[in-house]
Amino acid sequence: MVELLVVIAIIAILAGGMFLVLRPATLFAKARDSRRFSEIAELNKAIATAVIDQKFVLVDVASPGNPSTGSLVSTGGGWVFYNPGSNGDLSSYISQLPKDPTNTGVLVYWYAATTSAWELNTILEAPDNCSKAVNDGGNSGTSCTTAADCGINGAAMPVDTCRYEVGTSLSII
Ligand SMILES: [Ca+2]
Ligand SMILES: [Ca+2]
Image (cartoon, rainbow, N blue to C red; front, side, top):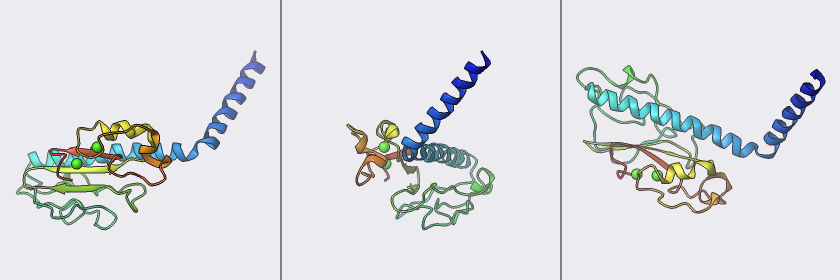
């Protein structure tokens, strides 16, 4: 009985290893996407709370900010550009602005705003997440018919299809 369990355990480990060998790029892409969902949700929640608490005053952002060219400070001068409010600033809710796990090329986070609304975007990589980018209620990426439409299987990443949007207005960018 013990021998059988050991054999089953070894087979399971080998099968897991084969899976990693066969699909490492996809797995790593999915892991990066998981972090993207988590960080963009955390930032969105921080901004929403700070707006209510008058620690974040929305300003018109002429060109969208991103962490590959902007600072990660959360006090107002970073890639999420805003004016601190009468009660403080965003650093009460998030000590440092996040940056995409890749943070180069098209794989960056984006922030844009008007004086009454904001939008955050992240570009997803894993084909399995294509539908999330399409069905987020946003204005970028409204169709997805094959895995190649989204992420690492595409010869050239079609950025708009893979754009996952959150915020209070999803048509700013
Ligand atoms: Ca979208
Ligand atoms: Ca949008």
